[in-house]
Image 1 (tube, helix red, strand yellow):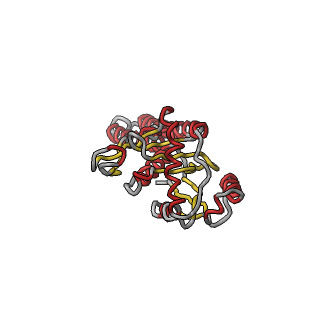
Image 2: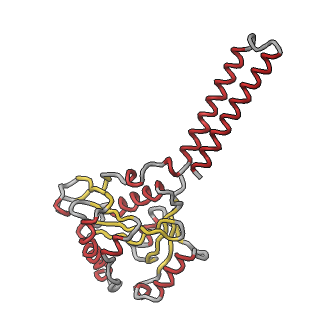
Image 3: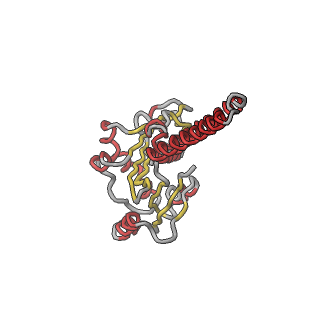
Length: 255
């Protein structure tokens, strides 16, 4: 699509320039070309300017012109970590970055730590965390902090980015780290050309459905797309459904 848009814009620009040139030659053949030369030059400059804007617009609107996907993940986000959380100083922003291979080994334990909140709150025990192999094969894994105090995992589902998991260590919760990870993931997905981010989550658990609703996700009430429907079917046959009602949500990224 990018190549076709660029080629079309250039061809239209050349055609407009050619029409102006042919008009001047015709005028010249009738004896008015020299007298009207400045007017024809002005017309040519106007056409050239409009054509340049059209070519630039085609480039900007194409996905290839967007920034490199890793560039839109900010190096630092305004998620303030308290003095004792992960050894960081009070008021210091936490870093959000794309996970490196060496980061992955500790993420299952971090997820296991975060999921203990379900037991503490009386919901029950959740299934095991993602494996290192699953994380290594993910579309994107973002991590927060050094040492890492939170992470987010994205996959691709039905042509959309899909938030497969979000975990923040117990000692680092309620500091804005989860929100910062979600926003960084949305920025990345938009720059990568995905129209939306989907997820499945618990409808009533405060740090699940209500959390995502406050961040622009809306419940999908109609028929689900095939892969997302398969995910929900798998959840319904697993232990997850015993912990509470689950739902699918979506956040559009256009604009």
